[in-house]
Length: 296
Image 1 (cartoon, helix red, strand yellow):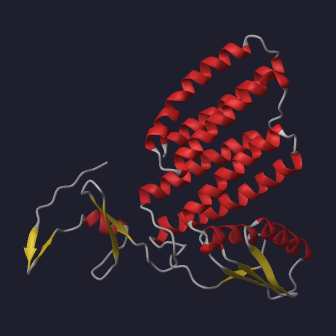
Image 2 (cartoon, rainbow, N blue to C red; image 1 turned 90 degrees about the vertical axis):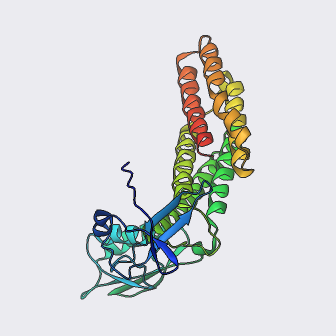
Image 3 (tube, rainbow, N blue to C red; image 1 turned 135 degrees about the horizontal axis):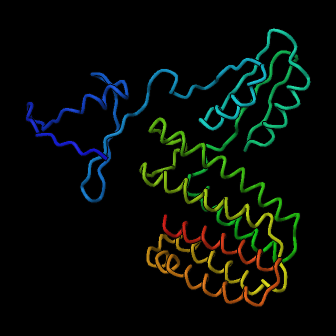
């Protein structure tokens, strides 16, 4: 990372510095452009472009053409925080395309088709902006905890339901963070975090989703049940550390992974091939937990 030094100058009653020319050109900043500034706890001053260029500001409604690329556009605009999307066609919209649009809209969180005619489809998102970003992360963590319990109880339908919910909440979380990092604007009126925290939330949640994907395909057996419960306990310690902002517990959890690896290697000496594979899956879960602990 390049470090640039500038001397403070006094103009009127204020101290000012000039911004690097290359930086202002990269972000197309001119006199009168808005920038964001943030003072860190250590006194560091962060200066960020607000990215309010044409085409970047989120509008109330966007109109898309009904063609073979429209599903990809719906996904992109939803990720960008768009709440009202209208799909138009000069002729009748193809029935197969309509079917795919319905299918993908149903997969999006709190999103519905509110009007559908031969040449127009109107899509609207409801309510996800009101969910605080930190609450989204919290919900993800509880859904993963539910998945651990579902496996123990052999409740496969509940496992699938919790995983589908988790994907929806993660999708909303991505919308919040991408919108903030792209525009500097909090998508939720109750959100409050720095750019660094936003990236940490994103990486932390990605690890939780990776963990859930392993659980989704995992099947318990008697030979691994004991170690499974240790992995579950390890996850819950990391979860508690995040919810309580407990740095000390997060650090101890981070260190604990190595002991669990040693124990897993001992257990595998007496297991058959299939159960050894299950222990390796649990070790992937444990690695995810360690990575999450490092981000608290």
